[in-house]
Length: 408
Image 1: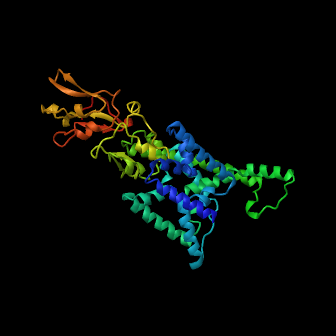
Image 2 (image 1 turned 60 degrees about the vertical axis):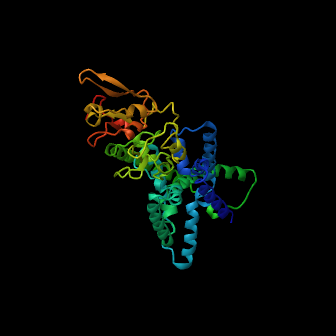
Image 3 (image 1 turned 120 degrees about the horizontal axis):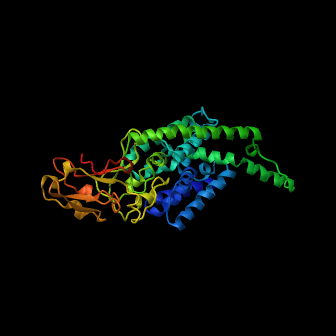
């Protein structure tokens, strides 16, 4: 009954995040996987808020050392639904698979390796991400709904399919419990030596030292081996799919690993400049499309709702230091090049990073962009009328920019 109450409270708190965005970040920090990835990243929010969120993550991690699958049993909203599915299954069919051995631990190691070292991430399998995709709606809700139905159907016949097999948050929670075995053994010995003799139930017996050490050693080897493989995949993905990311996004190789593909940043963007990518490697990740709109330098909504630290908050003063894109001039689309009147890029730039420079050879004025003042917000690109079907200004990813004097 207590577990039911805490899970219902977690569902209510998570649903309230739709109406109170400030709650959202605190809910995400209770997830052990998302919380650890966020703490390992360079997520920087206001000191008091970040400290409070770190306390939540630390509390969940400590409790997971002593309570097996604390997150799964007491807080996970998706686990509540799956428990109901398993309850019905026991009365209708005979479960065929109730244990998956170390499968959950392997998934946990893989998820951490992907998120911390780079690669094609598994965070989109996290139950909070799946739950929010269903609650918030949008295009991602259809995919999440089909996936949720598949998980429910599989759990009906194979109870251990998701929670003990595919769920990365459950795998991390199990790993934390296994890592706490020496600490629990030490505390148990101290109680015994003090005269607090009491029977130990079979479910709380501790494994022998050697099998535990072998499991930890094997898991560590798998962790670093998986990290090396997926780091290579992450680099391949970055080279295959360069894109303009939201402001404050970490480097693209880590972004592909840490991005949960939850669509929170896309749904919360007030300017509607973000859309999901349709690439092979980075499908579902946010991409800035300046044909849809432009970014507001005073807005950090995408960083505030990011659950994994793939997007970090940036003040307006820091935007030129970490520009979301690099703007380049393409003369084949500039109206001034064709002796047409146009001053939209100059008047629309909010940072005053564009000015006109007299070109003595061509005997006309051409726009010039000051990179020290440009934040890459894309406002000039959005309002550029272009010429002959081409834009005079284009936005490129910061790491994929050509030389300054390129005109094609």
